[in-house]
Length: 157
Image (tube, rainbow, N blue to C red; front, side):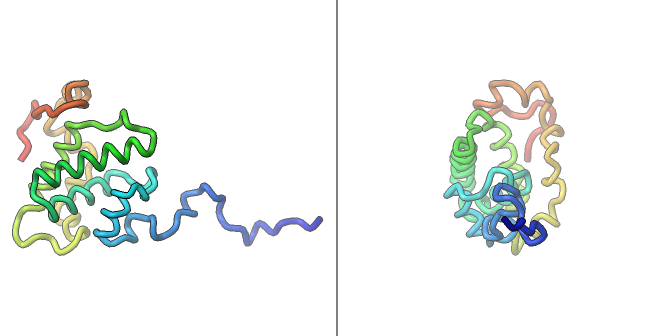
């Protein structure tokens, strides 16, 4: 039986490099990204902090503040549940990030695209930014996970 030439074989089926380009968030337009998220087509491993901020920006630009927040809450809860991590949803973190992104997205004229927004607001891409507003104990509490808690160190904008 002839051997298999592994030099021409692609990556294993479950490797990240096998993810189709259309599923890679950076390759999607904002509208396609939002639709892919809402239809749960973005793999869990490709939805990190930057993608959360992008989604918050998209919702903040497309919808009034309350609707943007409601969509983000429902979407993150559904995404977490779909990927087997429903218990990972944290309400205070979701609301706080939406407030920070929404505040940054409000000035006129709006950023023409997400990359321009990201360049103008690099601090939003520090996943530890909430530590400026919340003590560790407050943010890690069950009350914060399941409901909204105001910050205890500094007020959010």
